[in-house]
Amino acid sequence: MKNVGEAPQEELATGERSTRNRVARSILDHGPSTVADLAGRLGLTHAAVRRHLDTLVAENVVEPREQRVYGARTRGRPAKAFALTDCGRDAFEQSYDALAVEALRWIERTAGGGAAGEAAVAAFAKDRMEAQAEAYRKAVDAAAPEERTEALAKALSADGYAATARNAPVGEQLCQHHCPVAHVAERYPQLCEAETEVFSRLLGTHVQRLATIAHGDGVCTTFIPRSTAPQTTTPSASASTAGRNPA
Image 1 (cartoon, rainbow, N blue to C red):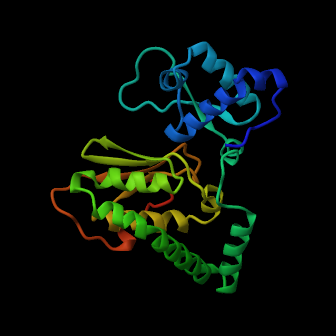
Image 2: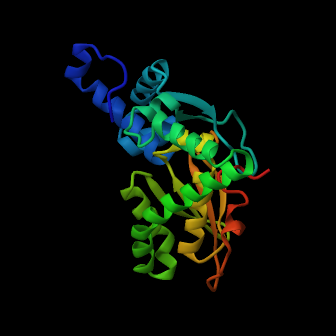
Image 3: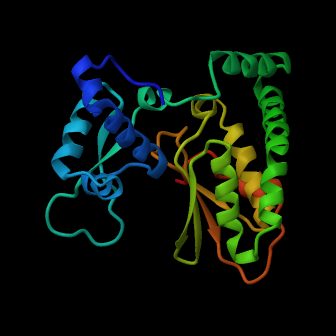
């Protein structure tokens, strides 16, 4: 990660900047996090975490958000979760830039615009994902059926997606805490759709994209239903909600 902002010499000497980078990295790897989450993961006091977060907020690296509450609300105000801003994500090495967007615009325009242009961009996105998917396929095929989502998460992490797998009611969730092409995917959701189609084929079941960083969410989240037998799907079955939050 590149250091964000200029740190005074005495701050560098005491390692404050290094610890602050660890805080930002933890949010990247785990998604929006509360003070308690960060303190537990990094072995810091709550006061130390708050001090670093105050600086990161001032530098526009992270921003506070109301934490989503699932199920019945408990008494009291929910703890705030801190998420990376676009500036914060840019502090980590990204594999997109303005040239990528311009290239896709050229493809879209050259194909005639409209539906034909969208189809051309989708074809590019699928071809790109197919090239990436070979390594993912090897990892998934080598894993036991109940460990395939975890194997896919590890393969994605090797490509810079900081992915994790976790159990969920009636299935699993594949969470990508970083997206190297988030800004490009914000303009061209075909990239997310192609990725979701590949996940579906690799795991042998319909999957549903619940959230994406490109859409403004803190984490790209894909739901994989638990199944007793592999299902066959067509690309369009998984692409219907890919890259977009369900209504």
